[in-house]
Length: 369
Image (cartoon, rainbow, N blue to C red; front, side, top):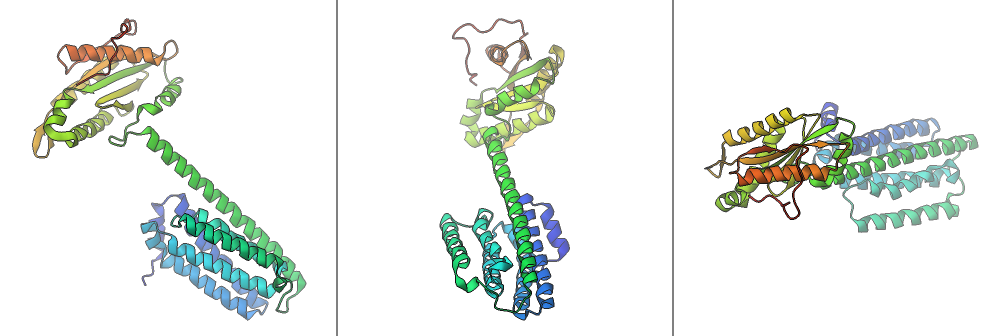
């Protein structure tokens, strides 16, 4: 049994999200509440409940200082969940039996019905079995004559105080659990949105996020620089180095583009094509940036599986008038410029002005290697 120091626990918590931080501080709060009850039952001369709260405080300290760091590292809160579940039921069932329902300790019996929402390790079967057990137990406590009257001598005024105090603590716990659940759902939604809007290979945005990017760009500038980039002879790279070699080229290219265009929005447009959007730019700046990218890729050398891997890219560039045209028109121009670069020998950066005529019917295509 290894006890963690407070500094070790706090250091581990720095790297955790709100879910784990709030869960950990919930254990601290539970230990503090039971220590308060320990003092209160000692003052009221109810030794059995005082002894039970000593056990409860010890259990929560064990969860904090012995199980805390391993649980945070493994992200397996199964054991802590069962210990808290057992403590909540055992302590509050006994307290309700000794002090009666007027004391309000039965409120805490409802908490185990909510906890499975927050303990990540439970299966659905375990969740429903625990839920049914808690509901049956709560109904029994609420209706059984065993819990009608106190079994220890206690001033009725103290019973009323306990009732209000336990109700307040229960509502506070309920509020914290609701907040924790909201955080958990928010984190899940963010992760889902991230996964849907990102290319898993390169980590760049994918085309699903384009509409949102264009909406956000509306207030930034009147014109947006559009660069459509395609890896030259990509099929040959795959044939020579395998698909792993092709994936390696795409990942390295994505990293280089992020370095060369730190303020741009870069999307993996599909296959070996990338779309780069530069806010608040002009023709000369866009042409320089396109040529800078082309030269940087041409002059770089990669090694894959011990073999040298050189490659080049072709770029089609244009300006997009945010407020006066449809983005598809700008994309058609960039695609037409890219197609011209491919036809004229590849490893080119071609610019089409905003006044350039769109492609004729049937001329638009997906750039091949």
